[in-house]
Every structure is written in C-alpha cells, then in structure tokens.
Length: 429
Image (cartoon, rainbow, N blue to C red; front, side, top):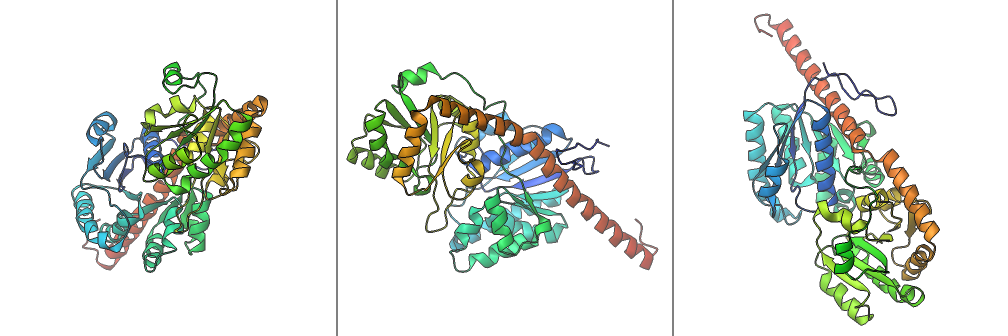
C-alpha cells in the first residue's frame, strides 16, 4: 500500500487507498484560457505525478485541442472530448446537457471509476447528481465563487445551484470568497474544503526580460505596467487607463501592456484615443499560457483592478496576482472578490478601490518612483508564493479528500452486502 504523505498540518493524504480512478467532467479545459482551467490542469497533473491514480477527463472541443491533447495525454491522464462548450447557463441551453449526461453515463457503465469530480456547475455537476445516484459513486464538485454571486441574481437557478451543492459528497472552494458563499447558502461545513490555486514554481520564477519583446514593443528605458486578463469590464482596464494621464505627467517613461482579448476591446481602444494614450498603451492580444512568463518578466508592476459587476460577475481569486508575485513583481488589485486573498495589501502589493482612478494613480506612482519598495514587495510576494502556494500539497489534499469519499462509499457497500447476507445466507459476497 502506498505510504501516506504528511502535509504541513499533519493530515494523512494517502487515505488508505492504493489507487483511485477518477472521472472528471469539465465544460472546457486547456488550451481554452481561464484561471479555473489552469487550476484543474495543475491539480490533476500533480495528482497523477504523486500517486498511482488515473484521471479520465470528459470535456469539450476548443481551438487547438488536438495538438494539446497529443502532448498532454498519458496512460494515467486521459482526455476525451466531445461537443462544444455551452455559451451560457440559460435554461434554453439545458437540452444540450442530455447528450453530455449520456456520454458520462456510458463511460461510467463501461469502465470502473471510484470517484466523480465535476469542474463546472451546469451541466456537469447537475448531471453528476444523477450519475451519483445511478452508479453509487461519490461526487465532488468545485466552486470558484462566481457560481454563487452570478446565480444569486437570477430567478430560478439558485434553487438548482443549491440542490447540486447540497447533494455533493464534497465541495471544493477554490478561495475564501467561494467558501463564504457556500456556507451562506447552507452547505454543510464538513463537506466544504478550501483549496486555493497554487503556482507552478518550475514555470514561474524571476528571470531576465526577453530582449526581443523589449524591441518589439518599444520598452527600452521604460517603466512597464502589465495587465493579463480577458477584456471585460470586471477586469478593470478602464480605470487603469483613466489613471494613466496623471501617472504620465509625473513619470513620462511609462508603457502599459494589455494582454488578452475580449468583447470590451473596441471600447478600450476608443478610450485610449480619447485620452491621447496611443504612445503609452499597447494591446498585445492573447498570450499562450506557456509564454506568459516572458510578459511578466517585462513589467515593473502587474496591475488588474478587478471589480464586482452588477450581474454578480466577480474575480474569484486572481491567479495572475500570485503568478506575477512568483516572478518577483509587485501587484495592484481591486478590493473585490478573491483578490483580497491573493494580494496581501501593503506587503506583496496594494489593494485599491476599483472605481478610483485617483487611488490607482497614486499607488502606481508610489511604486514606479520607489524602486526599493517595488523590489521589497516583489520579494515578499515571491517568498509568500514559494511557501504557501505549492501545487504538490494541493494535489495531496484533493487525494486525501477523494480517498476518504472512496473509503466511505466502500464501507457503505460492504455494510449493505453484509446486511443482505445476514438476511439471506444464500447470497454470496
């Protein structure tokens, strides 16, 4: 039997189970961009690297999936893709959940799995509730926080959401924001496990900037600001642009790189023109995740002034903050959602009011004009990430949680069989 591994708090993570076969369902997966997709990739990669377990991932086809799957698939990590990701969570999309339910049910019927993990609420976790009942397999559901805040503002979906979380054997809260939301809607605290994102420390570490990128974007002798985020309102690009005129008056050699794509790009480009920032702002487009370190290394300050939108859209954690810290960079985030947990205010960076361009400008100037403060906060962020955000320990935690669920399920089955045998001795074990 595999020896248990000790975590920092003394928890046994071997779980007394030699091997676990996981069926994991997610509406999308890498190379589709998104923090939750990176979260799953790192979690399961580290899981199969440490244990003799096997993960089978049922997910959707996204651009670039064929090449990605060839590179990432292995005997103990299998990726199977069918269908396309849902465009939204509206009820008219629900019929599309039926083929996905049948696909997952067929997989469970034809192969043996010990545990079902669902990475998205609709339709994966909703399907998971019924698969749990049909196949008697323990169900673990992930929650990143926006599933709570966004659905709160809808009419009927909160009932479905609460039903799913209450039926799950375990719910993984990816941050404190998610944990608080789950407790608020009445999920039993013993079923909630907080598991914040880690950072791939073999990929994210301080390094010299790429000189080709310096030449490409005209960054020589510049102070560089960077935002890596989808171009949507809650990421706060607008308020950074509004703060730039004041910053440029006092520190003229600033260049702001905006990495990412999204529906808000035209509006942001229009704002750049209105504010006369054409020489100071560069839209660099989407960056493949394996190249993002090159851009972090370019910046003096990473900034994403995230905010809570009226419809409940919120930054659930903000992995970009800890990634930038891992590169030794100070960060600025908004006082909203999970960024409050990702950024230690006045230690690894600053948290600002997300609607205050004046406060954003002041914090930027404080960092840009004080190189010692920049280095001190970047170093503090690096040490914090190295000590608190290791993916290996998070994989140990998810293994321990899953092993406990599997052992309980096996005990229930054993007791059921024992009771049946006591009532009818002719039944064989």
